[in-house]
Amino acid sequence: MDLRSELLKSIWYGFTALDLEKSGKVSKSQLKVLSHNLCTVLSIPHDPVALEEHFRDDDDGPVSSQGYMPYLNKYILDKVVDGSFIKENVDELCWTLTAKKNYQTDKTSNTVLPEKDAFRLWCLFNFLSEDKYPLVMVPDEVEYLLKKTCMAMSIELNCVELEDFFSQESVQERGITVWVFLEMMNTGKITKGIDKGVVSMAIEEVYREIVGDVLKEGYLWKKGQLRRNWKERWFTLRPSNLSYYTGEDRRECQGNIVLDGNCCVEVLPDRDGKRCMFCLKTLSKTYEMSASDTKQRQEWTTAIQTAIRLHVEGKTSLHKDLKLKRREQREHREKRRQSKEEELQRLRALQEERERKLAELDLLKEAQKQAHALLEQDELRRRQQHEQLQQALEVQLREAEEARVSMQAEMALKEEEAEKQRKRIQELEEMQKRLEEALQLEIKARMDEEAFRYAQAGLLAEEEEKMKALMSLQEEQEEYILKTQREKQELKQEMEAKSRDLDEAQRQLEEVRANRHRVDQDVVHLVIFLKFFLCAVFLLVEKRPSLGSSYSSFQIPTQRDPGLRLRRSGSEDQNEESKENVDNRAECDSAKRHSHASNGEMDIP
Image (cartoon, rainbow, N blue to C red; front, side):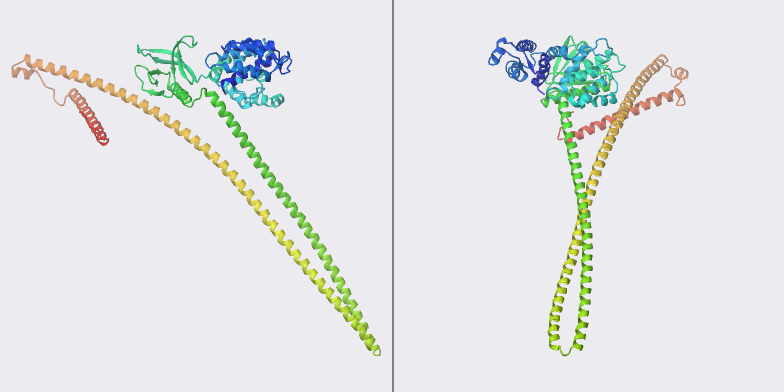
């Protein structure tokens, strides 16, 4: 989202505020006032004649937003120079115009937000809204803004109230406009039981972070460049620079560090009585700073590295980048949802196809049963006809035999009749053959129907195998997602364990250094004591030159003296320790010479 788009969102509210009749048109006199005020806050010269010349061919009636856009782009937005004006002044101008018309609240209510907080929420809404007119915000962005605000107040967002708000019919039909959002905030459901001052500070913090591009701000100790003394300053980090002030009110700026790709941040060891130190290196200077604790140092170093990365990538705002990423994630989720719906539709289509095929198979089975019944009826009818024909033939044969015996005289006539009967029998036999052939054709048709039914059963089995493969693929995807989540949790636990081990090693190192310091002090005291003791012995020897008297009065401590043994043991420990230190230094020197020799370097004494 570029600067022009940001300005157009605020100007859109100002234009619609002047449209009192909600007809989409504004009078030229009102547009002149709006244009003059826009030129003033945008620090560009205003040409009062340009509007009249631009709309010279039009009548004296009002101008629509589409007719005003060419003039706005040509005479105002094209002349805007980034950095020459304060965008907050443009937002305040447009907010003043639109709030008079649309933001009507009960001033006596305890839950109503102050005017300044409502203005900041309006600016945050414009930043996070979609680039479509009329401006609305998707539920994901509303939830993100409310979570940021609740996090600044150190409370947890009431998701039940938020879901009830999203489920309202007016919200689902027209979307979440800025006035619906402010009305929801004024109900006090989100900030129930929280002081207004805390809510205002939280809204200001979120406003400075998202709209003001403030990545991080807070107190740090900074080392001076000339006097080299430490002073506490209020630092404000943006993607392009790191500014520091004398106080939290940011009235007196003490310096500005420009960030670019040549900058880097490094963690420093504790020294000069300061802990949790780090430095920011530029091409010309190195700035040393100290945080209040390790967590703050980590947050500052991470934030500065993020600012440097944004500059290298050519991005001017972190939250603009995050907004684009969230929009891409929503589009990706929508694509995945559509793909799942398409997959479900395909599965439903396959199920319907399977049911249709099953219905067709049932119809085929029913038709097969009917055909079988018809075939049995035909077979029964053919058998009856054949039996009747056989009975008739038998009757005729008997009659012929009786006629042959009884009527030998009429043999010639009967032979003729017999010839006719034989012809009739041949015709009947041919008819029987045809009936048998028809029966074979019917049997073959039944076999073809059985083969078709087996083929349909095979297709049904293949469809079931495909359904099982789809279900197994879905189970594998779910197992892979669970496995990824478990690996992420194990990696997080391992990082926490390593962090705890590092803190314990640091504490033990500090204890070893303190013990070594105490031992060194004890060794120094013992050496001083031995020097005084030897001096005393030499003085006694000089005062008593005679051998008998000196050795008789002065006794040298024996090895059984516990004090002497203690001192000797202490000195021996010191000697052993010094020998060990010497051996360690010798080993380190030999290791260094060996590393120099392996690298091809010459060891110069």
